Every structure is written in structure tokens, then in C-alpha cells.
Length: 209
Image 1 (cartoon, rainbow, N blue to C red):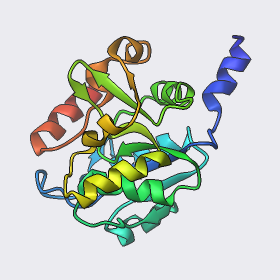
Image 2 (spheres, rainbow, N blue to C red; image 1 turned 30 degrees about the horizontal axis):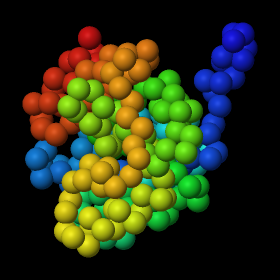
Image 3 (cartoon, helix red, strand yellow; image 1 turned 135 degrees about the vertical axis):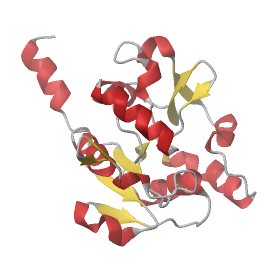
């Protein structure tokens, strides 16, 4: 591929898959809303939105604290089913997008690798879900889901089961393995997320380094 074509591919905005940011609200484990934590003076939510807008033509936000995010000037949807955490957010996102699939990411992931996300979009094909998997660690909040996942997700909600990965047994999933991820970034750093103040301090130090 020529340099011009490679650069054009890197700047391409996908219009057949929607970028969906999950920003549920205050974190019980962290003690405050993680979306507004700052790394290098930039809020996590602002960084994630900027990265998503560089990849997808349509980007939406799912949250239960709509007013706090209105300054972002992005379409916002509140959870259709309350109290189901990320599973409810994915359900709401799939019900709200204009496309047949969405790339879902958590708002507390400070290091989104654009090339990896683009690779996941490019290999989706007819797969109903594309999910990174490093050894036994699956990353359900850095994944592509099709609207055809709605039925098994709704089944989990009606059964009051909360784990996202529980519906994977009901659908064909394209797992993105460690050797594929390594082509773009270090797997141990690709899916960093923040759950506690100690983790936040460690991630800040890692990114600054």
C-alpha cells in the first residue's frame, strides 16, 4: 500500500458501524464518576470521545447522568433498563444506533488504539460480535456487537443475570487473539481501565512514562 493510501485508510471514518461510549455514572468501587478524571489535564471522557470521533462517523453516549455530558455535543441516551450496568448500556446502545452494529467502549479506558479498533471493524464481516481475548481475559467493553445480539441480551436481562459475556454462548463470536493484538500494541496496555484510586495512580504513572 502506498503512503498516501495508508494515510487515507487511517483517516477514514466508518459509517456502517456506530461508536458507542458507555458512561453509566458514579462508580461504587472508585467513589466518584471516573469519566471526569483527568490524565495530563484531559478528562477521560473527552479523550475517549476524541478517539472515537476519529474512527466513526456516528458516535453516541450512554449514561444515566445526561446533564453532566451535555457539553460534549454528542447524542446521549439514558439506559432503557436501569440497574444492569454495562449489559444494560450495551442493550440501550444497540436499541439506539442507526447502524446494524456498534463498537462499544467504556469511558474509563485511557488508551484506545485506533489501529486495533480499525482492525476489529475490518474483520467483522458477518460475525455477530468481535471481542478481544488475551489468554483467559475477555474484553467485553472494547468490542463490536450487532443488533442481532439484542435477543440473547434481553434474555439475560429478563433472567436478572448481569455479566455481559454470558450471552456469548448463544452467538458466534470472533475473538481477537493475543498475536493479532500484538501487531498494533502491547496486550497488557491495550485495555487498561480504572476501577480504584490506586489503579488510577498506576495508570497515570504508566502513561507519563
